[in-house]
Image (cartoon, rainbow, N blue to C red):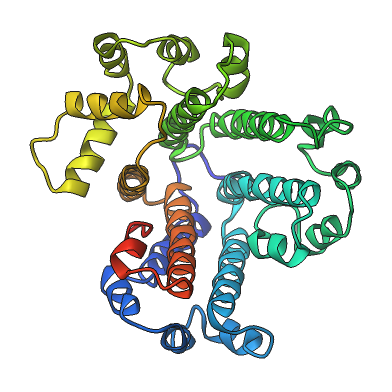
Length: 375
């Protein structure tokens, strides 16, 4: 174990490799070219990229068109995550593994929802990315069950199983899935924040990033609750919010009950979301004069009409968040941050290519598809 303040050679080597891998991701110019291509041309383009070439060769006899693109990029994403776990040493390995466990939650929820709603198994499988503790073999086994109770029982070896256990008999009831998902993420963030307090290089900055991520998630959940047909009580808000963010849950409770513009804007301006939102909209609209007050008023316009946030604005906030993570990784080049910065960018590269494939399959205009691209 290296002495405090001393960075091990293996950590330096691993972080350098991840910064190099970051340069292999598709640049903006590549997306502009891909937008002008047909689906067969996109497949041809990917077959010439080192990151995707072998996956295209392996899968071309089983899939075609947009489905082939989605299968290829999903397999590339899973491979990148496995590579990260094989490359990162010591604390980097532990923190990276904990961070990637969020994919277990996404996979489990997709399987439970798909099972209850009788969605074809191949459609559920298309959504799965075996990047966490639950490997592809176990995910395939979960897909074989006919009810969510059996699937939950098969997850007894999963670290988050205790959260699922209490939902064994009610997982198909109305509202149960949102409660399960909330509880899983509450436990996930609690564990990750706890691990990040161990004093590893970059952990303090990672905690700050995670706390902001929690704030964004909580605000999105609050907007979802506010848009619901039925009003919820404070207990529901408390159960939905994830502890650990910088914004007190009490402030979210207060926001939920506000119906006057002046009071809402005043309270919302107290949150750390506003500066990021203002920056995101400035970049989105290319409007240097868009202020924090403008940002708060923009949220109010959706809030009082009980409408969800504008998708383009949500995507713009995601871009700013990624830029912040990358800036942190440059300031702390030999920490877990360069690893996570690469993994997040890789995740969005795959999401971008999936959006392009789906958009082209449905003959959407390029400018419409571009709204879903995160660069």
